[in-house]
Each structure stands twice: as structure tokens, then as C-alpha cells.
Amino acid sequence: MNRLLDSMKISRTQSSAAFYILIFIIVFFIIALITYIAISGRNVSLQAIQASYPNLPITIILYIITGVIIFMILLMLFNSQYEVYFQKKNTNGIDRTLPPHTTFWTPATTPNPQDPTNLLLTSDDFPMTGPETYSMSLELLITDTRTTDKFGPYRHLVHRGTSDLQSFIPNSPGSHPKGAGDLNDGLPSQMNPGIFVDQFSNDLLIFVDTDPVGVGGQAYRESVRISDAPLNKPFYIHLTVHDRLLEVYMNCRLAATKLLHGNPRAVPNDWFGRVGFARARAIVQNMTLWDSNLYAIEIRNMCPGINFAKNLAPTSAPVCGQN
Image 1 (cartoon, rainbow, N blue to C red):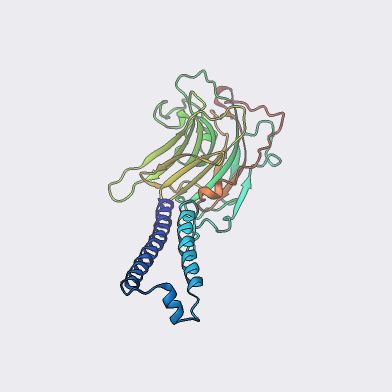
Image 2: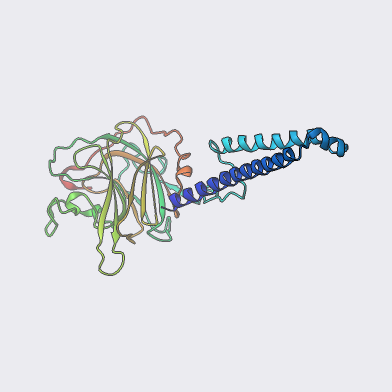
């Protein structure tokens, strides 16, 4: 929303500049027309004025005035295609230095590089200022999304939140049945965010738990869906959350936007990659975190070539629900 408002401010600035230029040209022509009529009414010619004021370079003055008018017209045409500013340009955060960030889960640091699972990043590794503003990026390779379970669950890729998926055994006593959006569905009790593969397809689901806004509000488990994620082809996922706005980018292009109903929840600041009984048959690597929001123009340049090892062999959920 802030970016939309900033864009509107810039548009108003450009429109005002073009308006003032147009007013200047109109006023100039009116003055010139009045002067011409006054001179014509007195039967005074340019030759007579030149004779009265021999040192006045009238011809040069006329050339200069004509040149100024042509320049103003060309400037208006140019400004309709490109941004021309007549005052100091506001950066709007775009020309800032890229905020500090740290990359984790690089291929050289994860155990079992052919099939890295149970990836963990604790709060001490990357403290976060708050739950409502952050950004992350991830390199993904999904190899297979087929399933034989007609009731789910969601396949886990990455989430920040509670650790209950690590030790949960499906259909354990006291757990909610499938369909309740709980542990039996492969979802942790709290997450902000959570990235999962759909239960039945190669769609991606991005979840954000939110808390009520104001008195009498309601908590939500909010989500956006990215349809038809690539299979057997590496790609980037970027998330940025700020001002209750969730933006999801795939390969540095905006794929989904959601205005959250509630405030992003302050979940435990621990990150988990491919954990639990329903981990996705995929590879996650090079997760980068920012303790701030990112702008689209910054994310646009964050997708260099992705390098995955040639001998990868990701597995899906283990037998009998064991990690």
C-alpha cells in the first residue's frame, strides 16, 4: 500500500510539472498575442522598432523566444515517456543500500547433501526485531509431488514457528483428525511464515498465522497459493511481509499479494527445513533472511543462476511417520 501511495505522489509531481509548463506556454502566447495586437493597432512594424532602437537585437530575441517555446514543447513530450524531475527526487527507499542479510543452509554446510532434511536455524543464529516485518528468499528444487494419500497431508518445505512437527507421529492419541488444519495435516501449530507443497498437486501454499486487530477480533491462519510450481527445475521464492501485506515472488517476479486480516503472529523465531512425517520430495538451500522489508525493484535483481548438485536424490516422508 505504501508503494502505491508513493507511486501516486510521483505521478502527481510529474503531472504538476507538466501542468506548469503548459500554463507557462499559454501565458507566453497570450502576452505575445496582446503585444502583437498592440503593435499592429499603432501601425508599428519591427523595422520601425529596430530603427528606433538600433542597438536592440530583435532578430536574436525572436530566435531565442522561438527556441524556448520549442524546447518547452519537446520537454513535455519527453516527460510523457520518461521521468523528468524539477525538484529533488525522493528515493522512497529504492535507492537505499540493500539491508543487511545472512544466508543459511548452503549446500556445503548441510548434512547429507544429496537429501538434506531436518534443517534447523535457531533464533540465536539470526535474531529478528519483530514478527510483522521481514523478508526471506529460498532456492528450491521440487522433484515429485505425486501422492497416494487422498486426504493429504501438506508436504513440508520451510516454516518458522513451533517445533512440534519434528517429533509428531501421525494419528497419535489426542491429535486432531485430518482436515482440521493441524499436525495430522502436516502443519505446525504456529508458523509465520510456512511454505508447503499442496496435498495433491505441485501448487505452493504460503501460510502466515495472524492475531486479532483490535478488541473482539479474530485470529486467522491466512494463506496464498502459487499454482503450478516448476518440477525438476530450480527456482527462487522470495517473501516479504510488512504493514500486514504479504508479497510472494517466484524467480524475482511478483506471483501473489495478500493484505492480511490480522497482525502477523510473534511465533518462536526458529526456522525448520524439510522436517516431520510429510516432508516434500524436494531440495531447499541458500535461505537468506532480512530483518526488514524489501522492495520489488530490489528483489528483481536477486535471481542469478542457481547451482544444484548433480547427484541429488530427495526422499519423501519416511515409513511409519518416523523422522
